[in-house]
Structure formats: structure tokens, C-alpha cells
Amino acid sequence: MDLPFIEPFKTKMVEPVYRSTRLEREKWISEASYNLFNLRSDRVTIDLLTDSGTGAMSDSQWAALMQGDESYAGASSYYNLKNAIKEITGFNYFLPTHQGRAAENVLFSVLVKEGDLVPGNSHFDTTKGHIEFRKAEAVDCTIDIAYDFKAQHPFKGNVDLNKLENVLKKNPREKISCIIVTITNNTAGGQPVSMANLKGIRQLADRYGIRVILDSARFAENAWFIKTREEGYANKSIREIALEMFSYADGMTMSSKKDAIVNMGGFIGFREEDLFKKASMFNIIFEGFLTYGGMAGRDMNALARGLYEGTDFEYLSSRIRQVGLLGATMKECGIPVLEPFGGHAIFIDALDFLHAVPQEEFPAQTLAVELYIEGGIRGTEIGALMADRDPVTRENRFTGRDLVRLAVPRRVYSDNHMDYVAAVAKNVFERRESIKRGLRIREEAPILRHFTVELERL
Ligand SMILES: *Cc1c(COP(=O)(O)O)cnc(C)c1O
Figure 1 (cartoon, rainbow, N blue to C red):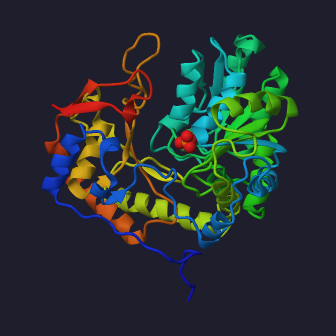
Figure 2: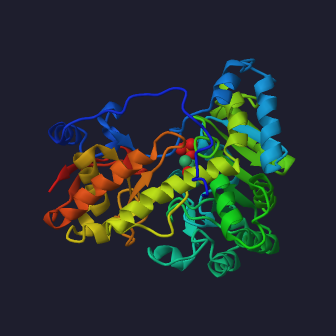
């Protein structure tokens, strides 16, 4: 008999899962203005709001934490991290930042100016926020098939090279800040980008003299998909694949809270010394001195370990398998989920699930609220609320994509927890016809409004 798959880790420390009643949850979500970001975490049973900074560190990472060097300048922890980054990404220069968006802030302070264009695959919300904050424009060049929720394509996160070339052709070179490729493409559903696509982007970028930056939060999951789906990579290790991916880029931003399995941290990787030097000034202003930049020494130490653990094939297989298990169970219940399943999350198509709720009433947010009320699950809306208003017309951006994302924290929940989540979703699915009205905005911020928006029920 073939032995079943097992997780390559076991549990040393546990924390409670909080239970509550439907009545309590109805009261709490109303007090939270129907915004799940406003909920206290001890009022959530299974927290799938994000996989960012919510992973469980290993005993080895905790040990590394104890050995952190808190020297202001030249800490050994900095060098540990520098060596790990060099080994895993190949980049010679790096700047530590307190998280991914801080890396964007520092790098874009050098690269992005008013009126610029920043083409790429669907930009992450903070990336887009930092671009639009500088009065530049993020141009989405993702392949069209990414928007067909059921279409099977192994690399749905890919950049459409024709769309990209059109942007590069039609605009003067000075107007293009850089090309940003997000691996994996979170906004498109945690979908990977193929190595062939990264190569193609590099060739175009060289032809037009533009830099390529990888938004690398989930680079290890992307490498896993390349290994398991792309011809010629089955026998390569995750680290070999990651090195090749980064070889097609001029730099990277990293939210270490994702694939590096730490609770806080980020960095920028650079190939050119000149760009590194320019960015260094902004790092000192915004983050901290060059050898800690927003991170404690102990956190840099744990991050260095996390980069190795996060690029272990067995670990990645256990994680992506668990996400797939949640997706498959929900699909069996008839729930409309985005396919193929992403690396870090399952996405529910709320326009299909709650087809009676008009898009102006935010069906995905409505569904996220229903999942909470039904079973204390906290997911997040990736739809019209998150899309913000158009910076010029100030109209809501209804793109035909209104999703609820259930993001699975790393090494935290069991398969039983996933079965519970699927059962909760099934219960809501069975009463979906009774949900006819959604939510209305009471108050919102001009940018990244989904974090703080206040809503009321219609
Ligand atoms: C999380 C994330 C960011 C932002 O990183 P933070 O650590 O949350 O600031 C940027 N890009 C991608 C693709 C991400 O997933």
C-alpha cells in the first residue's frame, strides 16, 4: 500500500480556537460596520482574512530569534539575512524594510514619478496604492483568460506580452517606471506566472530598455507551480527554479510575511549598485539605517531561516495541497470557486454565488459577512470595495470580478478546520436564494478604502 501524504512538521505549541453563537456574531459584525477588518480576532473562529504574517514559525526560527543581534549598525543578523537573500534570490544588494508595502514605498520613491505608467500583471492593492499615490498609473496586462473563472490554464497569472508591448511601444521610455510582475498573481486568484513568460517579459524589457521588478511575496509557491506544471522543471529544486526566476529581474520587492513565514518584515533586492544607493537614502528616511531598516535584529534572523524553510518542496507541497483540499470540497458542494485553485487561497465568485444581489450592493462583501455570521469564518473581499474609485472619474470600479478570498495561513490550521470552512460555506450556499440585498457604504477613505470602510445593511 502506498503511504499517504503527511505534513513535514508537527505541533509544539497550540492556541485556542474561539467559538461563538450566531447571535453574538450578528451583534459583533454590526458593531464592526460590516467590515471584517474591524473585528477583534477573538471573535473569529477560523481566520482566513489573510495569509500575511499569520503563519506559524518553526522551532528553528524561534531559536534564531533568540540569537538576534540588536546592534544598530552591522548586526550579524543583517549578514545572516544578506547571505540568505543572496543564496535564494541571487541579488547582491538588499535593503531591509518593515514589510512589503514599505519596500514598495522606498523603491517607488526612486522609480515612479507623476504621470508614469507601471505595466504588469494585476498589481497588488498596496502596490497600486503606492503607484496611484504618486499620480502614476498601474496598467494591468494580465492575460484575458485569467478573467474566465472556470478556464483551465496552468499559468493564469501570466502577463500578455502583446498588451505589454503595446504599452511599451506607445509611450516614451521615460514614462515607464518599470514593469512589475507579481508572483504569484494574488489579484488574479493566487495564479502562477510561468518561467517562459518571465523570459518573454525580460526580452521585451531589454528591447525597450525598461527594468523588471518582481513583486515576490509568494515566489516560492510560484516556483512550486513551475516545478509541477512547466515542462523541463520537474527535476529542478525549488531553489534552482527561484534563482532562475529572479535572474530575469532587475530587482524585487518582498513581503516576508508570506512565503518567508515570518510575522513581520520585508526587503528590496537589487542587481545594480546605483539603484541600491539611490534607494538607500529613502530607506534611511522612511525605514531605518541600512543594516536594519525597520526590522529588529531578531526578526532578520528568523527571516533568514524562513527563506530556507519556505523554499522546501515538501513544505510547499503540504501547503498547496491543503489549499486545494478546501477548494475541492467546496467545489463538490457546487460552490462557484475560481479554478485552478491558487497557491495560498480559494476564491469564491460572489456574483455567481449571490446572483440576486446587485453589484452596486457589493455581493462579495455581503458573502464575506454571511460566512462570518454562519460559522465565524473571516475571509476578505477582493472586488469592488478593494478596487477603490477611479482616480479620475471617482466612480466605483465594477470590473465584473467580485470575489471572496479565503486565504490559508501557513502551518496553522488542520484539514479538519478546512472541512469546517467548507461546511459553513455550504450552509450559506444552501440558503443563497434568500439573500437578495447587500450593503451600502456609510464612510470611506479616498485610497485603500476596504481596510476602514464603514457599511450598513440594505
Ligand atoms: C502582501 C503583499 C504586498 C504588501 O506587503 P505587506 O507586507 O502587506 O506590506 C505586496 N505585494 C504582494 C503581492 C503581496 O502579497
